[in-house]
Length: 541
Image (tube, rainbow, N blue to C red; front, side, top):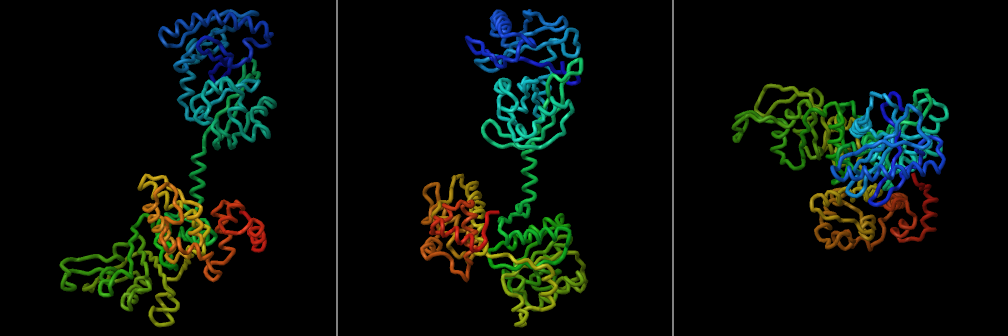
């Protein structure tokens, strides 16, 4: 019946113990009057009793033929088939097959169904009345409807989307006879979830070329689109978390550095995540395949700094019993991250400047000059310009390091990221402890009112502390470290630390822009919040 596809149209019924239920009243023969249909169904009942006995005996599909009144066209035979659905139900299908169709034979339908069920794409076969008469396992997985449910429904009930009302592909196919272009849309599944699918629909025709139905192919691209979305999101920048405007600027600079090996100087207070930015720059750069070597300059005493950076040869000093490469040499072909670079002494500064200018250095105790190709990313929590003015840091080195400056904002200036950061750290706690912890409203309010001098690092530690002392599954303000909890009673941050527009936007982000919740969080009424939003031009993005 469906040339080029090798499928046959099926009329379906569901047979529960003790009764017959018509799954689709599509007509046992085209144009049959209701009375004739009833007679045909009654005649089916006799056949069903025999088939049920055979099915119960061996639990295998059974088949039989019956004559219809009025009779079918001479070249059409009617076949009834029973197949087990599950423990208590069986499925009845009737298909009209052309005699002499060698492609299918009596078992061809089963073979084609097995092929369809092995496909990754969903397949829906739809008749001219929009009833689903074919449905494979992939379609069931995508839509959430079981096969027996789908065969009792119309296509717009199982695969519902906006296109059903606006631009139905099946209607267009039946109207114009032309294949529909593949398109992407969203559908709502049986359990209310949204899936993104690509749909391609082709016509099914009989021997005369008349359209008898439609074959709709569904490809679930939800996970692909989600991955693409995540690649576009800031999360692609390593472990950095945040969607505030300040962080968007950081992400933009990291993106601009993707094809560059320029030297970068990251400015930011302690605990803002400077090392994470360095990682993101390295792993999104041409040197991503090379090593990333990290050095905390503030953690090394002056006598050891040069040894760590440049290495030594055997006999260079009393304890030098063997050759040792320095961090710069280990980073050859990759990136060297110098954290707290402002703590380097004058001698180390001079040697580092030479590496930046020529790529050359010598190990301690070795007159031989070595060359490296290394990118340097430095970070500081100090005002290096002031250090230059006070002659504590070399001006030429500062300019060599500050080719691309990146300024990381403190947490108090991006409070809108606080809920996202808190959830990020809580998820880590959940994975580590197995406890389903949630952040209470009062705890969030206390955190939004705190100054966070230790920035993101302090937030992480505060939540780890709260997870330990929390006795239930909800973290309350009293579970937070005393300094944070006590500060919540002192009112909102003063204007010189965090401006009111920043606080308002942060609170709105934290409450998903729900005005009532946000007003409660800020301790003001709704009308006051509306006035402040209007005054500062704050609108939902």
